[in-house]
Length: 172
Image (cartoon, rainbow, N blue to C red; front, top):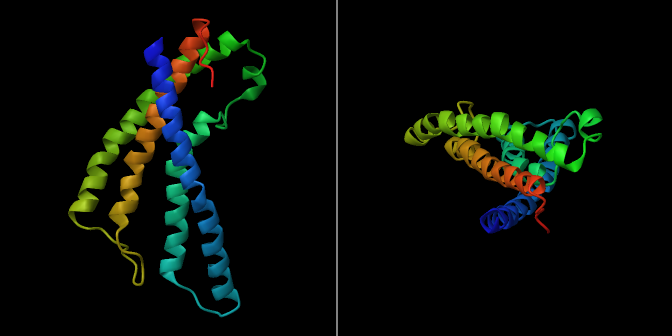
């Protein structure tokens, strides 16, 4: 049980730091969108690079904050049933869902994205659009990184539920 609690504390701390750091991308995204709207509608000018930067930032925000969202229990679920369950029943649902769905899905994405990302690095992929952003391979690298963070946080959530089932909840 000591190992489970140490793992949970370590991964929770990593996820918390990552999530808080990545949250600044939301502010950056707002600023870039405001800039894009201003230049497009006030100055009648548009930039492919700025538009790509918007979806690059959004992609990073989505990928790198997924583990933080899981840690804070903010992912979408059918709460109409879940909230009516006891704490141990919820823990069992979390264990079964984590083992049957979360772990295999994240492992498949990490494995499947590896060749996708490595081939992008190999050719130093950049935007195919004139005026687009370079270094697209760096953005693509966020796919396995984000899913590894999601995977290790998922394991922490499964461990947390195991402790609940064993009547030894992890105290934060």
